[in-house]
Image (cartoon, rainbow, N blue to C red):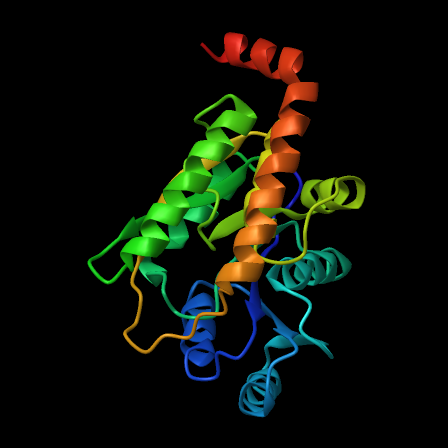
Length: 246
């Protein structure tokens, strides 16, 4: 088996108070950290510059292009630097670092699989966010004719770099909030296997959210519509796969 070389990629957009701790936890796992600055403001840019001076790898977008675009940049950079797998982690510090080693263990067990986090919330989760996520879960199950993807919106997942970049080159996947969900559906459509792992999630009282309800809900609704018609075109193949998995 070829040597596995994992890294972490962290898309960052104005999280100056949490990003250092996120880097510290990833560094403790022995992971090189690739920070993708998606057009942050001055305070966060300065903090990211400090972290880069401390040894973390930094790539900057001059303007905000969206989380999906930042992840694309991170995966492309990971490939350029010779990494085989990339652990995507959000910059806001919502995820428990003790849950991350399981993703690296899954990588060693089945390197070709995409490991997906599924959120285990505490009482801090806003109800409206929780209900909205379950609506997306149902659409994902419809559009894959499967329950294989337990949670398509959790910001923790471990990508096989080469296969994911190949998928991104050939599939129309959005660059903003729709990316996390759409890349998983299209990975599944493409025959990819997934592993689901629990991730505890806490929403800080004064946490920063970049979710724009009108813009993002419209984009998410359009994504589900496109995926539904894409599922209809793939219906025979998906039904065959479902039958084989029983």
